[in-house]
Length: 487
Image (tube, rainbow, N blue to C red):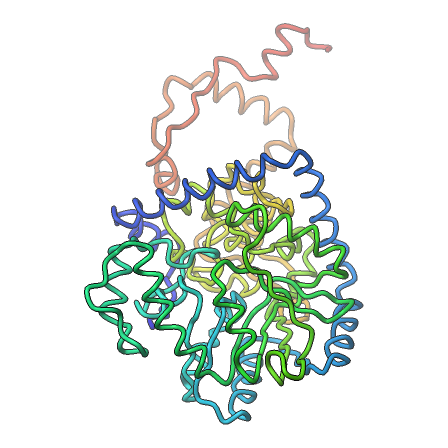
């Protein structure tokens, strides 16, 4: 499977926007989903209060994360499970690989997990001679097509029905049961082909790897929400279940979980209630897996938690509502973000988890128009534009931030010298009222001479948008003219 990381978002986005089929697939899918989501949310008169409650619960949980994690560990252990702590992707992959080897299995089935995509678990298992089979329909399409996920909720959103039929017809036989002869592109035919193919995997698998949408600290319970029933097969049939979950997925109690069971379905699939909500609290004799392991993943989350502005990204419940309203995502698609987390939430989460040292990660905070639509639809009120601007400052100016648990000085990223110079000049000008007033008069006095496109570094910015016209007089001049100099 190709895992080459794009050099930077602008280059990848430029290639994606030239693909007319990709743009058509994304436009149709995102507009359909966001229309249904808006209708589902409008049914609740207290949606804003529910949203505020979700944000408050998440903030309180993050504030006392150490306490709730220890409570969770004690509850999982008391229920017969085993808890493992992974500081980064390498440690998490090593733990899972060791656990699978101890069972003697060389195959595992996976239910959709953003955390395992984040750490590259499938690739790590393959290097160890262990084959992982994706069981979520969209993830199956991506795996068979040797592709990458491009959406949090619908990883194969960039594929249409004809393309999916071709993938099934050409690749299913390489991974197990082949596609039925004469397979068409009707949804029912494609779903039946996937069902027959996956059923063999579920019945043969001895080990399953899952993620979790939520972890309930008071009882040590894992919670997975999904729409196909594949997850429940994956969570109950194998002998050993290994769940890899980010440490921010905690909620203190079942009472708190009830809030998110209302927020998540309406924000993601536009459903009033999720079709399949699976919960498990350790192993149970004669019912489901006999062995349960929970791998708690940090991988940059405590660094993110230390940032007073950026930590709100850890509220995310992976609904993908922000993707479906983002004009940048709709045109560029998910692959351009080079991460398991595409779209607006990926633009603020990935640079905090991975840092901003690479050209790709430094470019992600700029993958936005700052229109604010992502904030308006976020069910836990993450102010994504605020975090984007905050991260742009980190990229352009550098500074002292927490990296791998210790304070470190981050140097400014390359290519932002003009931006830094412009910001410093603007700050100095605004700190000197006389200079600022003179600059305003000079700007309005020469407005007929202003070019329609910026020269130099600003050329790329103004190539796709019109410069705002300069008024005949500034607000300050208008105020003094109409209200008097002393007002």
